[in-house]
Length: 365
Image (tube, rainbow, N blue to C red; front, side, top):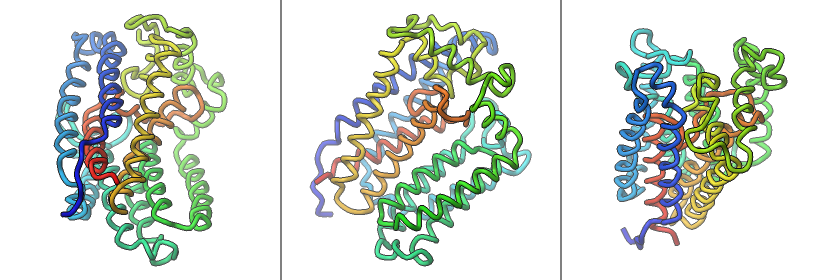
């Protein structure tokens, strides 16, 4: 194929595996009390996390050795499959409701989340579409509107579940790809204003979202209701201080902080490992994003560059939203922390995406 291939970027591999290791340790520490209460097994969530971590690492090393151009051939098919799953999950009796959202397909404790597949499917498809039509992207109707329409359809299906957090991550990563491909900032600014108006409409249309906004502005208005998670998260972070209470010594995991192993796991990290532990996690994410953007800049072609931008954008947006929620900067959205929060399809697909990024780094100029 004429491309010089080298070793993958070790500075993408190292922070990814370190974050995964921290995640496995902290999932056990955060979930042991909850797992024993619900399942009589303190290691329940740890065992699940280890299974998906191993599957994810295998998938990462597999995609690391698959030429990224393969995804150009299958990008459209992958998108159609993802749309099909998003429709199927909405059918009562097939889609499984968890946490108030019909967003899962599966049996019993094991399942997949189609919206997670859509995130990477959308990245691959947009990279293909925009790399082949880059000269049109400055035109609103024939260049910008088609990718925005596809993105909007996916966002709409995800909102029917409803899952605002995942939808925001998908839109954020997609817009970053579209902007990087050469879209006019003026067009995107107009669309941003429309998007803000639409977001306000979504919030007004669902009372629970409005409660989350008011709880974000003043969680003490309803400390036992809508503001409970935010308050308990801050109660976890505060006592952590510089070095934390010590690994396994969290107090908030004793049925105070809801779902400490998923959305609010960073609260437990800050409580047990303190400012130093939280800063280490942020530093590892910073290194990963930096090297990912370097891979995008030095990629051999536009298709590879846009994939890299999309994957790093997906990770960065998710990290910003999750930690922003935990420290009270954003309303509660239900977004997990990549590589660290307990998860199945989200963890496996995130590691698979990093594998694609690593393959691109092998052809860096």
